[in-house]
Image (cartoon, rainbow, N blue to C red):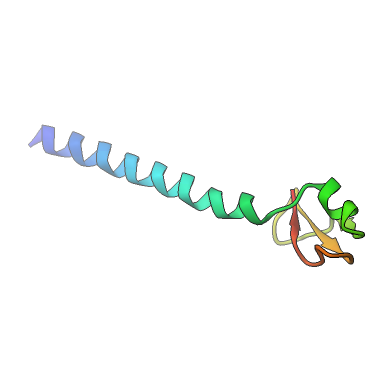
Amino acid sequence: MRIRRILAAVIATAALAGLGIAGAAPASAESLTPGECTQGGGTVDWSNPSVPGTGTCRGGTQDGKTVD
């Protein structure tokens, strides 16, 4: 009985860790660096209230994309 609870906890922890890694990959693949934004002719707007610490590229070829 105790082994089952420990095994269930280990599996749950592994599953949550896997979701965290999988969830982070697409966000970083679609975000830009500040240099990529300005190279495309845009400027970085750092006032993104939905995600603190990130910005949005305004103007240029990368307009509307997230900047990390």
